[in-house]
Length: 334
Figure 1 (cartoon, rainbow, N blue to C red):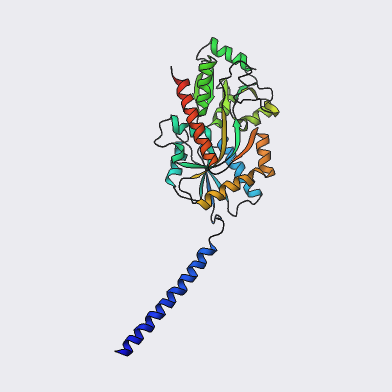
Figure 2: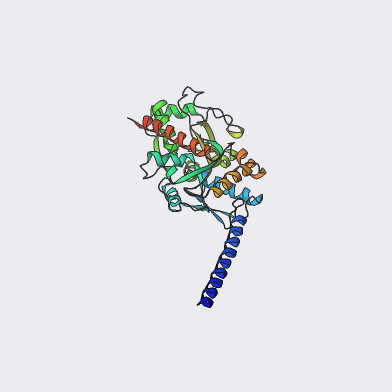
């Protein structure tokens, strides 16, 4: 009996020793992983719009600058998930809750839709704004060969011939429609809203003479402006833009100070993403702003660089959407 007890005791000691050794090794493994989070596989960078629009150009500029400057050990892969005024892309993000490897090209124009288009969820329930990297001011462009060379003649025609001038835009129930409704309410400009799948499509429609004016971010029309095909006749910004857009007045300059819209862009992640990944992407955004390639993209397309990181970016985005949603309701009331 004593021998059996001794053998059992030895076995127990041996088992304890094995588990103790395993526990020590596990602790070392955890310690080895406790450093700053790094991505271990490629990142899907979701674009909630069709190719050619501002969000598409933004996402590809980000990915290209990240690759050129080796800011990431893995590849950022832009992926268009368009439809439903950006709802398709945002709902996809909701389905990826907690995924550290799926990001979205965050844009305030799309976020507005989650508040005013009857979505089941508001944007902050679907994504987290990890960082805001730029303000993207909005312009109105006309065709250089068309009849309207300046904003005053365009507005007068819209006032004198209600519902006849065609206003080219992307989806409804977003910041583009908000700008349209402000024109209607404050400038009494009654324009015919013509909806396209993306701002890129609206620019193509203007180039083909299918609309009289289009609402576009500078990145969406800079090529045609440089070529002399488009005339930027006004900006919704608080101050005039630079470069080829310098001659476009603000609406405040021509007597409509209420007509203001300033969009922002950045990087959004899934809700429930790990803290390490959140911090990593927010810091990468700051590094992205310092690259020559991204600086050139911002300058060429008249975007104003800024930086808001974790917490601050989400708080700012939510406050802006609540403000715009309230104003949207006001300007759309008949």
